[in-house]
Amino acid sequence: MRKIADKSLEERKRKVDLNGLISTIITATAALVAIIGGFLVSRVITLAGEKQSIERRLQEIDNDLTIKKEMLENIEKVIFEEDIDDFIQNHCEELIIEGKSLEEILRDDDSCNFSEEDLKPYVEELITIRDNTIEMIEKSEDLPSDFTEFINDNGIQIEGKKSWYELVYKIIRKNVLGTGFLYDLEPPVLSIMDAQTYREKVKYRDELRNEVYFLSVRKNEQQKILNDYVKPYGLWSGLAVLIYSCIVGIAYPCILLPYPEETYNDVKTKWLLISLFFSALIAIFIYLAVSMHKLTRRKQDPKPDK
Image (cartoon, rainbow, N blue to C red):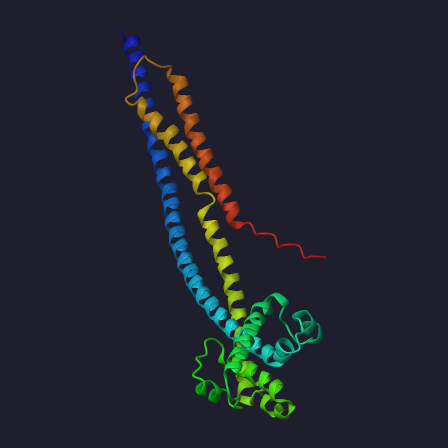
């Protein structure tokens, strides 16, 4: 009887020890999951804050870039129009009287930076102004040297570039009245102040171009950094490790509690639980080792071009 009692007591102890083992595995796994999970949550919060900071910086750069591009477009338009006016002033008579083509003028003028496509619409506008001016002259009885006096006497309203109308008028008047009136067609000479203003505009345009270039480079770099935050390396693998640990170290052992008597093979169940627990530990330590390796390794410098 005593032997039977001792045997039953040992069996009960074994059952109690197995329940205790299951509880220990659950507690240990939960502690590890809580620690690793805390690190992951902290990293997610840090990455989210850094991402918002990069997005704000990117928005500021984008706003500055938009403003600078608009300013650059405006100053380029002003300089372009002034250069067009200079070209028309220098070659107006060749275009409207001598009938030279743009191709001939551009071939002879090495200092011109315009293409034929750039100048074509303005030359067409100049030809239209010539035709309108000829029509006004034919209806007029007098051709005074002052263009303002001419349009006021004839009640003419000028629509468009008045300076071009005046230039065309003087050229046509010179050809109608003879070469004695050549002094009316002296080309306008830029004053020192006008030349300095033009140089300042060109300098300002170049500065804006540099600023737009550097802002574009900064925007691209910030965009690359932001794209890296969209793909946070290590977070998903860490989450997978935690899910696996919760399944094998918490969920499955919890199903066995309270451990049923005379249902499973206790020895096999014991080693199964221990094996699953150690597999969770191995997965956690492998994840930590890989993460530490990625953090501590140095990126290789790109090889210089030969």
